[in-house]
Image (tube, rainbow, N blue to C red; front, side, top):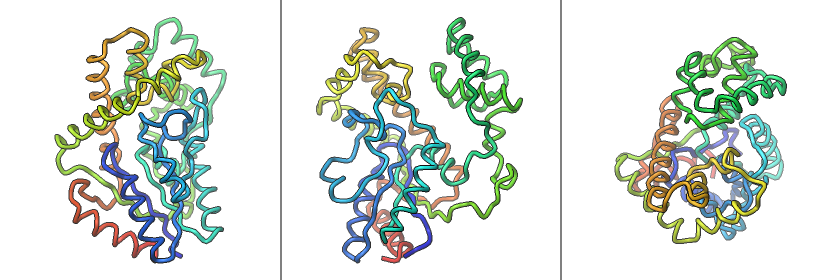
Length: 319
């Protein structure tokens, strides 16, 4: 069994799950059983299936999938939790004589799993309470502007209403006196973590050779979600009464825009255009993360490259 952990990453909508299933099937033909660990901040939530493009029940029965449907939408799931869960699952999967495969596009999760966040302070309830009180007075857009004064790099990648991440960045600065972006740039060795703790990871990144084609594909995918009943799915969450738009689950791309539509804040056409734009922005943010990684790039729109990458993955896994 290979000592490497294979990871398939890439921006939203490029076919990561399809490649993972194709690889798992070919591994099985060669006597190797793959278990997939989802690295996606939206797939963790129950009752959020259509808008997250969650693997079907049939696909999840074909091969074990982990970290899917593990939380109620009112709960939070952090990068640190993912790192802990992923490391535990890798050990358990290998203990069964199977092969772990990390698949997804939540790149903050990837960094936490691969390198850890030992240089970041734990949450401080007192600091968070103070920040929440300030936000209640001046609003999160003003808190975002405050963040921009002390950490412009982090502020640029966050939306002005991303309360959870704005709060965390301000909290880290309040505790350490240093911008979150600076701490992210530190290597594990610089932050006091032994470099030998690093996981031996082989990264294959599905990336679009034509951004316009990807944008068109993303719009078509969202339209299919609407046809499949996405609005009814979000309406089920909306009518529960215990969820709100500032929760990480409801802030997920697509869900936030449909939530605003159901609340009467925007019309249907505006909802679609805002969802298209949010998906494009998500893809752009993911590509920014990916460019900073040591990865093997696969053209998501080139079947020959995908097949070559599949064969290379099989070789790495020892299949």
